[in-house]
Length: 341
Image (spheres, rainbow, N blue to C red):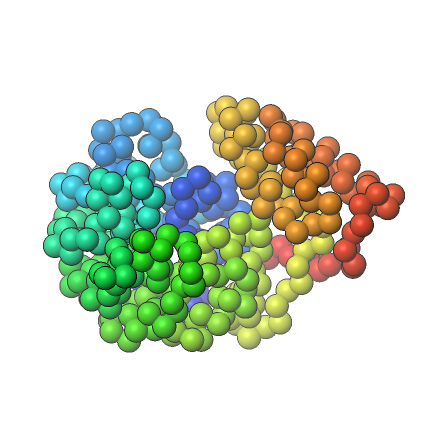
């Protein structure tokens, strides 16, 4: 069960495709911290084939992000094929990924994302159309089904493999579940046992230990980390060490965490053309970086009001000054081994 493109590690760690999160700056940051593979935000096939500027802008990536996959979604096989051809010819990623997992209403109402799972004939047609229009490996990301009544991840995965998918990622929840309940890792194990192609496990990876446990419990060929990377890109460094049998690196200290957040903010600022828009969009990342810190409610309030990313360093400096003066109760110890890879 070899991956269809070269990888540095036997058990690769993927940064999951996430709308509004897995943009180029965050992808680059996660690669630096040890993510083996990154995937773009999911992008509309119609937006790509019609060359809508906002969609094409999200297809930009740098060499340091490779290996990278471009994820596309849609329910029209012809449009998906055209989009795959455009992605291949113009952007040349390592692979093209098809989104059969997104549960968001505005996507599924047109049968995109997990909406496709209601019609396995459509799923196969989409995979075949994409495969016909690219020489790149075609991979898929699925859920366990549309609803509990239609829950059958093994059958869905087998259909995807038969249609030509070269690797498959499973988030073992149904679309009806959205993100509620627990991800059923036993379903990942069942799909691993049934398929000949590599299977990635995804769902409920909140810590590096979760990534290692998923691999051990399911036998998945790789682990795809989504929300567990929010505000802690060093999760990849930690998970890689543990998968390789080394001790888990320490959590970064507060100053180190802030330094990483500032680096991320600078990357986002230089990437976006609209500085104020970049700051507003980046507020969610800032909230994730300070989650769980003492006095974080007031810190988040200030960060969620920034209108330029240049304000961030001053706000972090004020917080650290407060720690030194005793105005903020800091956790102990405040120093830790640097988390950077």
